[in-house]
Length: 628
Image 1 (cartoon, rainbow, N blue to C red):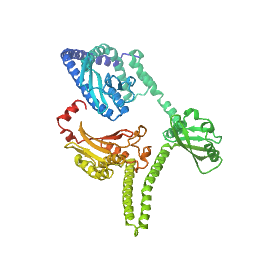
Image 2 (image 1 turned 60 degrees about the vertical axis):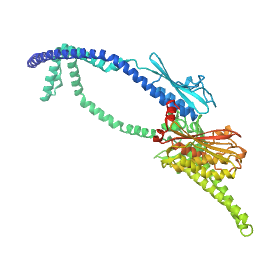
Image 3 (image 1 turned 90 degrees about the horizontal axis):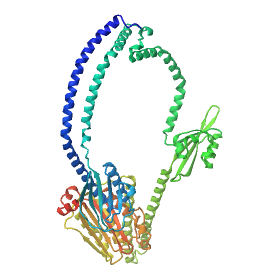
C-alpha cells in the first residue's frame, strides 16, 4: 500500500505539531511530579512517630473496652450456667476483634471457655470452685497486652476473663495511601516519558486510520480500499481485522438467525427444567415401564440420592415402599384420581415423614405419571404437639369439673338435712372453681406464648409495692399450713420497667409453689437485693426439694416431678413455664437450686429501669467497676 501522497504529507505535518506540544507537556508534568514527591516524602517522615504512638494508644483502649464488655457478659452467662452461649460468645469475640486469645479460667488454671475450642479443659461447671476475687490487672509484653478481669459467681466462686490483644505498632500501614500516591506519581512520570518516546512511531498509523475513517464517512465501503499496510504497526493490523469482521457480519447474522430458530424449543425445555429445580417439593416423571425419566434437585435431596443416579432407574430401586409402587402402577394402569401415600423415612441422623402424591399425565400415544414428594415432618410434629397439649389441658380441666359436679350433687342431697355438709361442699366448689379459673388462665397464657402473641404492656412498676401485694395474697395460705412466710426486703427497691400483671403472675407462681410444696410448720423466705442494675429475688423454702433428674425439666410445660409426694398436690405443671417465659420477655432469667428433702431456692433476676440503675449509690457503682 502507498504511504506517500497528500494523505502522507498531511500526516507528517500533524505529527510535528503534536510532538512539539508533547515536549512542553512532558517538561511541565516532570516538574509538578517532582515537587509533589519531595513534599510527600517530607510529610511521611514527619508523621511516622506521631502516628505510631497514637495507634498503639487507640489499640490499647479498644482492647480494654472490648474486655470490659465481654467480662460483664461472661459473668451473666456463668451465673445462668449457659456454657454453650459463653463459649460461642468468647469464640465470636476473638474472631470479630482479632484477639490473640480470649478465655475464661478458674483460679486453679482450668479453662472453661476459649477462643480456640481445642484449649477448653473444663467441660461442665462444678457446683463450686472457690478462689478469691483478685482485681483487674493489665500486663504488657512487647507488642501484646493481656487484660485480666475478675468474674464473680455468687455461691460458687470466682473466675477470670483473660484477653490478649496485639498492639498496632505498624504506623507505616497508615502511610499506604501516601505511598500509593508517590508510586502513582512515579508511574505517571515514567509513563509520560515512555509515551513521549514512542508517540512518533504510532502517529503514522493513527493518521492513516483517521484518513480511512474519513473515507468511510464520505461513503467508501470497499474493504480493499480501506485496508492499511501491516508494517504501520499493530494498530493497522487491528484495523484490517475489524474490516475483515465487517465483511462477514451479514453471513454471521444469517447463521445466528438459523441457530436461534433451531434452539427455541431446546431453550424452552431448559427453562422448564430450571423452574422445576427451584421447587421445594421433589418432582419425578415416571414412564409406563416404571422408570424415572426426570427428577429435580429436591427429589434427589429428599430421597438421599444423587440426581444423576435417579435418571433412567427403576422406581422400585429408588423407593422401596410397596404402597408407593402400587399407587404408581394404578395411575399408569388407567386410574384417573391421584393417589397419596405417606411413609416414615430414616435419614441416618434425622427421621421424618414423606408424602408421595402420584398423578397421571396423559399423552397422545403414551401414559406417564408424576410423583410429587413433600416433607411433612414438621406438620406431623406440630399436630402431635397440639394433640398432646389438648389432651393434657383437657385432663387438667376435667378434674376440677368432676369435683364440682360431685360436691354439687352432695350439696343438693343435704340441702335440708345437713347445713354443715352443704357449707363444706360450697367451700370445695369455690376452691375447685378458683382452681379451674387458674388452669384456664394458664392454658390461655400458654396458647398466647405458642402463638407468639404474648405481648407486654410495660410501665413503671414500684417493686416494693408489688412485693407488699404478694405478701398480702399469700399470708392466708401460709397461716393455714402454719408456715412461716418471711419477706427480707431492703428499705427501698427501685422502679422496674415491666408489665405489672404479668410480672406479678410470675412472682405469685414462685411463692405459691414454695408454699404448696413445703410441709406444715415449714419456712418460706422471700429476699431481694439490687446489684449491678438488676433486682435479684430469691424464694427459698424448706420443702420436699427436687431431685437431680427432675431439676432440668421443672420449667417444661405440664411437667410434674416423679416424686410420689407430688402426686397428692394439685397443679397443672404450667406455672413455672409461664413464669420463665414472662421473665425472659422482660430481659431477665430464672434459675433453681434444690436438694431432695432439703428445700429449693428459685432465683428471679430482672433489669431495673436505667435511671434507677444510675441512682443505686456508690456501693453499686463500685461493684460494677469491679466487674460484678
